[in-house]
Length: 240
Image (cartoon, rainbow, N blue to C red; front, side, top):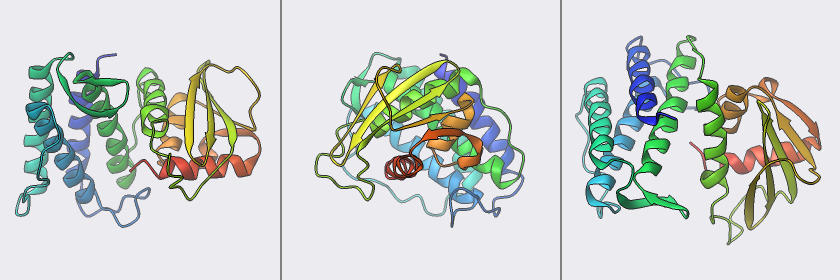
């Protein structure tokens, strides 16, 4: 997967569509406009540039970005994040939030999906949604399930959705089996064992459903509908 190419193309499309109007409301993010998305992604890029530069989290964040013109800032930041990733390569030791990967390769992947999801936001705001590459979408399903959901974030039971069930997701012949309870989420590749609920559909549909960018009508489900609802709620607690 060429994540750097995805960052370039997806960030370029986001910039192109944002120029259709910064005031348009983003349907999947109540209270956000296209301008909110542009500024959010620019700040995410700036943060990851610092993480890659320092190999650690910045001690004080964020700096004062007020007064920056949104599109100019965003375009400068999208060039700079590509340059920072290229300079780091994929083997640089750095801070990440993944228990399994503390290299800059993590940020190649994360920035590709951060950009893709928010590209969809601005496209939905202007009703000009374009497809997501199926391979990228499958990879995005994998990434949102682990580490975004399946990391060690739940040990204190800090969730409004203490679903206690096994959920299976399937797209394009690939499956993931998720065992969730109030204090853990475990993700396994494959379709072994029984599941209380199943979620399936085209890769982009499942990917965007997990990120809350499309509704339940975009996917198909089987089994316990309440488990599906609770699982989606659990996902929403760790995605933006």
